[in-house]
Image (cartoon, rainbow, N blue to C red):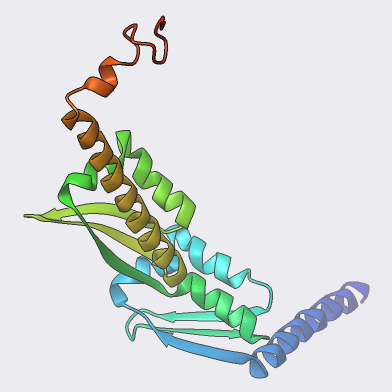
Length: 193
């Protein structure tokens, strides 16, 4: 008899939890938006990691992704929580045009620079695409991270362009600048006079 009473108590607790969750969802704020169906795998994430991270946001009760219709429905207790979850799940792809002669500098040795773009801007991926004379960096991530990556790439491109120009000016100077340094001409490491 005691076993039955304990089991009934546990069943009642489970039902109360389900009831409470249903009340939360029933009175929750809802946000629905459409997504590019090609981005579903990024929205869900590797082994569901992106969806789980969005569901773990404080105040989020439920997230439904309909891959066939290309919609996401988020339910939560505040507009802020909904916005935070949407930012994580509203995955987009952009192509940032770059000059072909700057691609190597943007990739970096062994892909080091492209990884920096991914890490610093928190995009899902950044890859180089070259079609004829046109070069792009394809960026996939949340809207805010993709915008940050675009700005980062544009800034780095300007830096590389300016660096290239300065190095060219040094070379055009006939190496006079370089020969005055490090070869006993009184510059860095020289004996000077």
